[in-house]
Length: 153
Image (cartoon, rainbow, N blue to C red; front, side, top):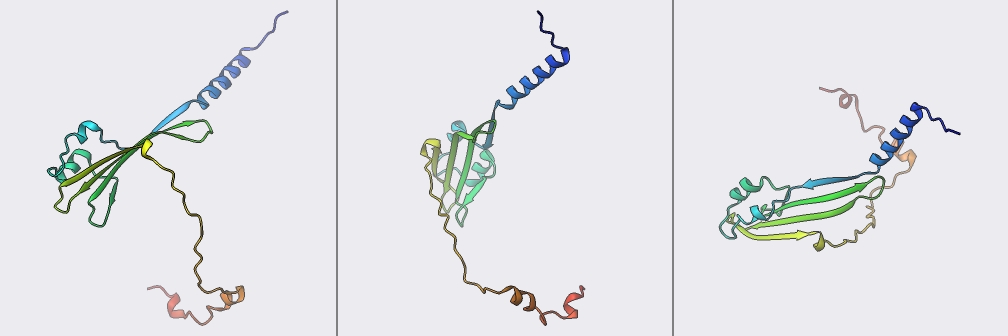
């Protein structure tokens, strides 16, 4: 006894299987900019100027401090698989700290191994303010507006 399956059914099964396979495939996302060790090797502490660093690396994504003497370059690689939570595979953070005379003072590099979990405080701050009833809100604006305020120039 033979089992006869139509060509349409075979095509449908293949299509559903392909969608299932590709729908569950892993995707990798790259964010940020990692200068790399070869470019960082060109930077010399106490000699390299801000303008030279900017020419080599481009504008920093993050400038910290009032005088803008701390530049932060960062990158990360994230893997996503279907509906599962994304996983950070690698992370690189490079801090460049300049002196007041715009010369490179410090180069610090961090990876995902240097990361730590920060406990975020979720407490809410409730300001005093005025607590108005519904009627106070409705009738509180009576007399505060005139026809002159409603006409736009």
